[in-house]
Length: 461
Ligand code: PLP
Image 1 (cartoon, rainbow, N blue to C red):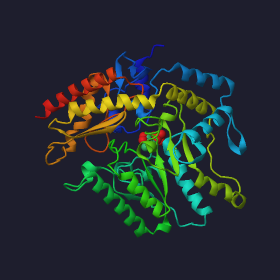
Image 2: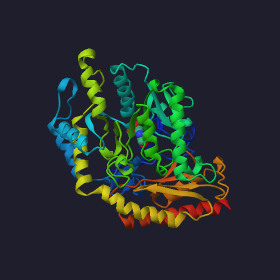
Image 3: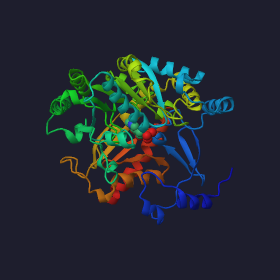
Image 4: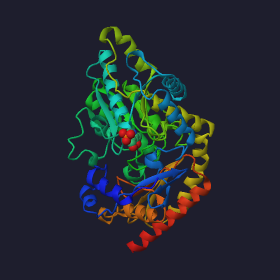
C-alpha cells in the first residue's frame, strides 16, 4: 500500500487533536510535519518515507513482544471472524476471556481472585478507585475513602487516575486533582534525599512521612495507596533500598489497601514477571495494561485480590448486582490478543530476556554515560532505564528548562535513527525497548545515544 504522504499530513493537521503536543507549534508548522508511521518489525518501525527507526521506547513502553508478530495478528483475525464482539455483562463470557482470566489470576503475585477488564491503564485505575470505595462501603467504613498517591507517580489521564498522577502539568488548567486524592513524597533518592542520607535512611523517612500523613488524615479516612513498583513516567526510577518493605508495614498497620500499578512493570519488564515479585510487594489490587496485549489491542485489567473480592461477594445480597462495567469490558478480540501475546511472553521467556539483556543494558548505560560531566544519575532495572542530565553534577544543579536538553538529545538520537523519550519531569532521557531486544541491538541503542549526547554536549559548551 502506498501512502500519499502529503494528503495524510494535511488531513492530520486539519483534524487530529494530538495528545501531549504543543497545539500552536503543530498548527503553524514549527514542529514540522507529522511522522506517519507505516510499518513495524521486531524493534524497528518505518515511516512513510521509508526511514527506519529503532524503537527504544516500545511505542509507549508497551510493544514488549516487538512489532509484526504474525501469531498475534492471526489470533486477532481468527477471533474477529469467529466472534468479533460480545459483552460479558450478566454472566456472559467467551472461551478466550475465561482462559485469560484464569491465567492472570494464577500468574499474578499475591492472592488474586477475579479480573475486571477495561481498555486503558487510566480506566483500570479509575475502576480501582471505585473498587476501594465499594469495598469500604460494603465493610461499613463509609469514610475510608481517601487514596494516597505519590509525587511523580503516573497513573493515567482520566479524572480519577489523572488526579492520582503526581505531576502538576497533568492537572493545571484541567481542574484536577480531585479532593479524594492525597499526595505523599516521591521514592526518588537522587532529588529527594538530604545530603548524606543513604537509600535505606531515605526509604525509612518516606515511610515515616506516610505514617504521619495517614495519622493526620485519620486511618479511618484512608482507603488505599496506589503506586508503581518502579516509578515510570515520573523519571524511570527504581525504588530505593528497603522502600517497599517499610511502606507496606505502614499500610498494614492502618488497614490501607495497596494498589500496585503494574501497567509498565507487568509481564516482564523488570526481569521478573511482575514488578511486585521483583520487589517483594504484596498488593491487594493490581492494574495491568500495555504489556497485557503488547499494544496490539487496547485492553487493561484491574486484578482483584481475594480479601477484597470476598467482601464484594458477601455484600451482594444487600446491594444487588455489581454495577460497574463498560460495553467493551472483556472484549473477545482483546482477550484473544492477550492470550496470544502471553503465549509469546511465556514461550520465549521474555522476563528472562529482560533480566539477562537488561543487566547488559544497565551495565552499558552506566559505563557509557555515568561519568559524563552533564550526567547526574544513570538508573534503571531490567529493560527500563534513564539518564538524568544536570548542568553541574557536583552541586546537582538543574539545567535551565528553556535549554530543553532532554528534548534536544532525544531529537539528536532520532535524527540518527533511534527513538528514546525525553521524559516530561526534568531533563531525563528514558529507555524502554521491547523485551525481545538483543545485546547487539542494545549496542546500537547505546552507540546512537552516545553520539546524540555528544552532539548536544558540544552545543552546550
Ligand atoms: N499507569 C501507568 C504506570 C502508566 O505508565 C500509564 C501510561 O503510561 C497508565 C497507568 C495509563 O495508561 P493509559 O495511557 O493506557 O491510560
